[in-house]
Image (cartoon, one colour):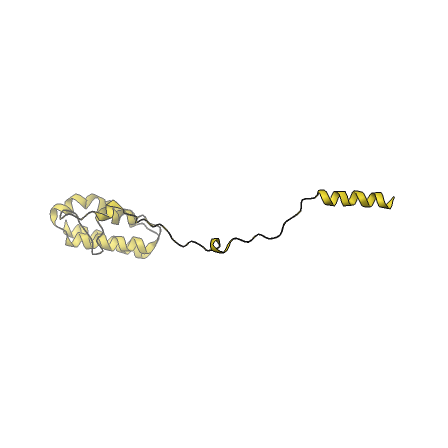
Length: 134
């Protein structure tokens, strides 16, 4: 009886899938290829030259970009945008100023009730500069 169970055991072992030894890559194929294809990202809006009719701050941002930064969640970004709008209001001519006056007043007025006291103070400074220009 012992011999028959041993034969069954050997037959089961023989039918199992055998794992072969570790296969190594040939010598030239185990090198990592470090060549990358790179393409520049070009944003057409950034390539546009600012015209003389467009108002720009000292950081070369126009009024539309500054107004969009006023709604940013970061307090520093909102303060920088208010400062830029104040600079453009002080520098600009009357024709360009009249065109952007409603957006400046609306954005500054909405920030007068901001949570941060520094933003409120800067918004009031912007309103004073705009109203002095008017």
